[in-house]
Amino acid sequence: QVQLQQSGPGLVKPSQTLSLTCAISGDSVSSNSAAWNWIRQSPSRGLEWLGRTYYRSEWGNDYAASVKSRIIINPDTSKNQFSLQLDSVTPEDTAVYYCARDILSGTPEWGQGTLVTVSS
Amino acid sequence: QSALTQPASVSGSPGQSITISCTGTSSDVGSYNLVSWYQQHPGKAPKLLIFEGTKRPSGVSNRFSGSKSGNTASLTISGLQAEDEADYYCCSYAGSRIYVFGTGTKVTVL
Image 1 (cartoon, each protein chain N blue to C red):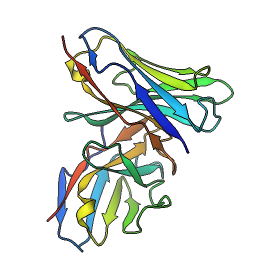
Image 2: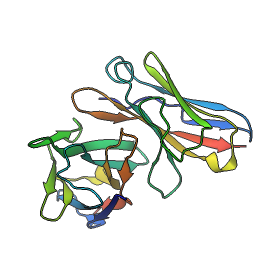
Image 3: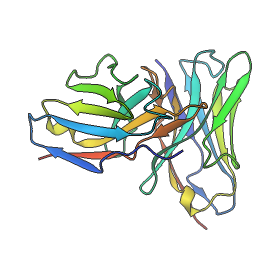
């Protein structure tokens, strides 16, 4: 049974970097068939796919155009987890952030969600 | 990439059928059979109802069904029940290894 456990601060100051981690159990971040995603949800923007990381003989990343200039999603094979870094945050980045596996497959898995508030 | 368009709200009485539309473009919904539908109750993570346009994962009620015509995907809920009151989101592959979600629909059971 795959489980995703999110961790990270719930409050970030404007202009700083938002950092979240998603720990994986029951699967491997290095799986050749899975993709590991970050999604956020806010009342104003609804659900928004941010990007993903995956391993297909080498590591790859894909990012949404809306955040491409300030996002990094990194795998950590030693801890079987992946992380989200979002730079130069503003109050518009306030949202519930979710990690998820394979969101278009028949067996997606989602983390529990983390509310991140951007405020001084 | 713009969000897929869904009606803001749909309502129905218990036992009725309702349909939620998800309108995209020929670059996303219209080009791929890769549309998923999610149900989300308040404070919870989204739950998968339909994947690849029409397929139901095990454990999901057969009251939920998906279809597609052109650039519009649809989710039909038959035999509406009180527990179906929730938010519903579509999600599609949009080419170039990008995904896009719908704007979301609030379903109210009258």
